[in-house]
Length: 164
Image 1 (cartoon, rainbow, N blue to C red):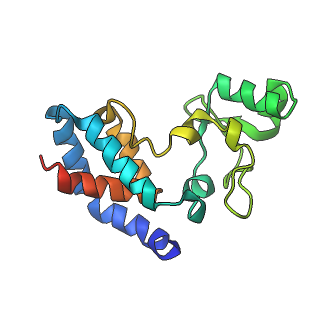
Image 2: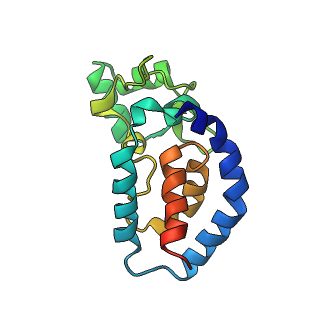
């Protein structure tokens, strides 16, 4: 996994134009069963991918924290939401709450999430390759293939199995 992670930025960069073109076509002419097929690709990939061997998402990027996330996690820590915000979060350029720093504060040395049961919705759904209306998140997916080996492999498999 480490070797693939080292190669991933170059692989993603090398396929970026092709993938962007593919997603542009997908927006115009999406298969009727796109979400079903994406779910199949996602499930197949995550049968062979163990996120605990990677955790690159947690090491290199931070999730957005919704108000519901903040309230849930603060309650878990027996804090007031504002205390949680002050201790762990900052407001980014898009006016969203994000972590003050990466790697994620809640990632331990064995790649386990210390708040897994109450983690943010963005973490729960990452890399978003099984999301309904997948065609609407192509820009996000283009970014995620640079970070997540599973997302990269899902998109490459998608291009093979669903030519446009």
